[in-house]
Each structure stands twice: as structure tokens, then as C-alpha cells.
Length: 484
Image (tube, rainbow, N blue to C red; front, side, top):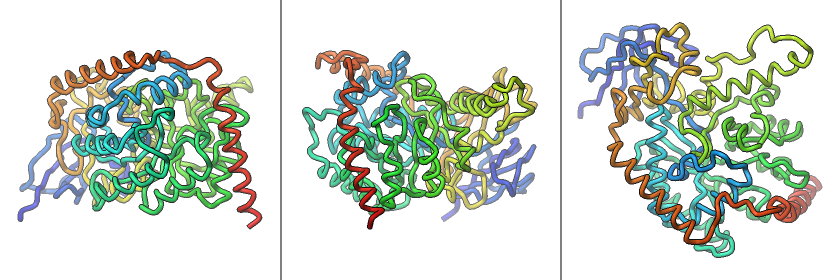
């Protein structure tokens, strides 16, 4: 059987591989979905050619935390606080989703990511209101053609009228999903999205961690994103029980103190930063400087598509601006200007390539254009004004690029966007389907008498007793572990 061979030719290749470096005019040879060679002139004549003249060629971007299902209510949270989001989206809109809505939301959200050159996403899936919703979420990712970690969430969106059952039933369904869809090493791999620590009995958190590790699944955790004296992060409690590890992606981390950061550094924890969400919804400052201080490689995520663009180019710009501003703050307060920037555009691009691949346990597969890795790559350029002149390719990518400048996208050797046009979906038909689904979802919300955003008066005060109960149990568990 002959091999499928593709040659990306005559592009400015940014490999993100320190041994290969950059090639002002280079070629990338792909065989059966694998990068087999990168060089200035490979002398290949028997491959399908992708002409990259005038384009930057680089690894596809990687998002380490995206609630993909929310793409059907894109932008609804534009003027919402975190409290509005929690009660409006998590407890208001989520119960109105059908399994088919979740399937469509994940498919559309994944295609939106591909269109922007994001070839891998960590799908933090917490709209699994029934087993059928979980099936729909996985199927949407499979249908889109993206590389993803489907991270099964156990969150209960309708605690007063559950359609699922108790927490044990959710653990059982996670194992069903693992058995049904994840028997082999495919483009979509298995993960677990931990429920918020302060919202569960402690033993439920331990059960979720155990289920994930039984399946060797990636773990992702909303951590340290709500300010409050009794809202425990759970980090120190988990470390005391030996539950932290390098297989965990901790998201936001804006309320962490020194002890939590030291625990993450000790245990090899990864960090995902969502600058647009954090700056707009009142989380606090993005934690780039804290990561730098503790030797943790940051990664980026689009987070809630109900607020943010699914375009990681925006996130790169927000993030690098925040990182530079925070690093310069001490100098500014001393009445001086910084002598240099602490993070370069080239280093920032690592956040969404090399760093992100390592955080998701995919460093041996993607994140750089290295021979032996899967062929996930993008071509950026064309005739757009912001792409000319290209004095510094990394500055062009971080500060000048948008989804419209992503001309070609290849995932696992398969072209999903070519010449600026998606090949995996009819754009007009898809957007019409999405618009109609969104209207139906919001209609159900109205029919149920829910007001949006709908944060009840004193909402956070109501959460605090629940959080205090968790904290007491978790602290006692940690103390017992230390005594043991």
C-alpha cells in the first residue's frame, strides 16, 4: 500500500524545535500523518505539494482549557461578572441544552478553533447533564476533525432536579465513556474535568481523581479562581494526600498564595491562563509573573466562548501584554522604566505550542515541527495588510495575526482548511444551524422562567457555608494524612 505523502514547500518554517531552529525557506515532508523530514530543500518529487510561498509555517496552536459546548451562546457574557456566568451559564443555560445541542456546540466550537489555526484543544466538558449529553460531546469532537482531550466533567447543572443521578452514577458513566470511545490512541483522548473543589463533598473529589488515574486520563482543575477567606483552593489538601501530580492542568490560579505555588512547583503541576476571562470577569491578574517566579511553564486557553473569541491569537496578545506589565510593575513603582521586556514574542508563542503540548501529555506527538511527531501545522500569511511587511515573524504572529490570516490548517496530515476556506464544513449551512439552535436554547431558558444573567442577591454568601464544610473535611483529611 502506497504512503500518503505531502510536501509543504517554500515557506518560512518556524519549527519550535531548538535543534532545528527556523528556516527562512524550508520544506516539511509528511507521510501518513507523520512529519518525517524538515529541511531547506528535501529533494522530494513524489508528493502532493502545498505551496507555502510567502507564508509562515508553524505548529498548530494548542488550547489547554476550552468550554467548547458554549459556542452556541457566543458572546452572551460580554457584560457579565464571574457570578453572572456561574448562575447564568452553569445553572441557567446549561440545563436547557439537549444532547444534540452539546454535539453541535462541540462540533462548531472545534471547527471555529480549527479555522483560527488551533489544532488541539483541551475540552473542559461540564454540560454532561445525561449520559446522552456526554455521548454528544465526544461525537462533536470526533466529527470536527480536531485533535482534542475530551475531559469528562461531573458537574450537576440542575441540583434540584437532576436528570442524571447521584455522583456514583456519574463516575460509572465516565467509565462507560472511556470503554466506548477511548480504546485506542486516536486524535481524541480521554481526560477528566474535576468539579470545583469548594462545591463538593471531599470524598467526591477524591473519587474523581481516582477514576481519572485508573484510566490514565489527563486531569484539569479550576483552581484558585474565586476570592474569599473560606473558599479553599484544595491544592494544599490534595498535596497532603499525595493527589497532586504532573498529569494535572490547573486553570486560572489567580488566588493562590506562595504555599500553593510551591506545591505546584514541587509536584510538576501545569498552569493554564485565560487572560481575557480573568481580566474581564474579576478573577484578578493573570499569573504569568507567578509562573516565572516558580519556574512553571505557562499555557494559554480561550476558556468561555460565551465571552471570549475562540481565536488564540487574541489570547496571545492579551497574555503577553499582561505578562510584560506585571513584570515591569516593580520597576514602574520605583519611578523607572524597564530596560527590556521579560518575555519575547517568540517565548510567548511557546505558551500555545511546546508548553501546551507538554501540559496535555502530548509533547511526544505535537507542539513542534519535529520529525516523528504528528503532522499538525498551519500556514499563516497571504495578502492581508497586517501580514506585510514581515520584519519579525514572531511579532507578526503574536501582534498582527487573526483567524483570517490562517490560510491552511493540517491535522494529523489531513487538510482541514486550504486557501483560507474550511474543508471540513459548509460554513453557511453550519452557521445557519448554529443560529437556529441558539434561539431554541435561549427560548427554553425563557420558558423555564430563568432570568439572565440572574445572579441571586447574596449568592456568594450562600456558597460560603458549603465551601466552609468542604474546607473543614479536607483540612481534617490532610491532617490525618500527615499524622499517618
